[in-house]
Structure formats: structure tokens, C-alpha cells
Image (cartoon, rainbow, N blue to C red; front, side, top):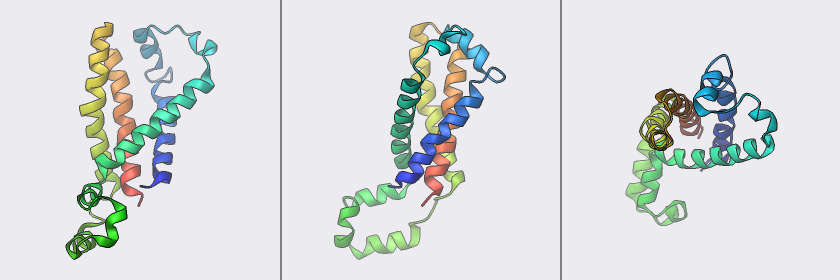
Length: 160
């Protein structure tokens, strides 16, 4: 587990959000579709919002490592890192051959995007349907997570 990669991936969500939800991109449309008044952010507890956002982004980064790094599955077959010493020689041979396979930004970005498409979009879409939200609302919010997961997955997968 690379805590630094997860930390950097979590931080990467902030500039994406700053750009994505800016008035020149989707911010104005999102506020209208979400029913957020323009003066609402001025009255919000931004420390709480950004603090919780960072914690949630860390949680997302933690799970993305298992969705983007396939070697985690191989490690699970022997019971985890603490069983490396007692693993059979075939595991060491497998890791020597494939231990760095698919550890690229591109590969992690692909799996991150797929996570956004097949997890974030349906979750946001389901909630939005019951809240009576528009497709614009769904696509703006799900799109944000698809971009974030793509970047986060790339960072986490490539950073060994």
C-alpha cells in the first residue's frame, strides 16, 4: 500500500473540483440544477466541507488501489504481505514475471474511469432519480467523479 500515492490522488480531486464546478465550466448549471443559491457557499462551513471532502477522497483512493493494481489479487492468494516469507516458490516466480505488469498511469486511468462509469454514475443516478434531479445534474456530478477516478487511478497504479 502506497500511502503517499493515495494522499496525492486524494489531493488531485481539489483542482479538478475547482475547475469542474467553476462558473465558467459547470458551476452555474450545477447550482441551478442542484437548487443551490449563489450566496450559499458564503454561509457554509468551508473547513468542514473541505475537511470531509479530503477524508472521503482518501477513502476513495484506498479502494481504488484494489481496483487498479492487479498484483493485490495475487498477494491475497497467499494471505497478504505478512505471508511473503512462507509463500511457495511459484509465487516468487510469478511476481518476478508479473510483479510490475500493468503498473502504468494509462492502465490505472482506464480502471479509474471504468469505476466512475460503472459505480459513481449509477450511485449518483439512483439517488438523483429519487430526488427528482435532472439528467444535467446527474451527468455533471458523475462526470466529475469519472474524471477524478481516472486521474486518481492513474496516480495510484503508476506510483510504485
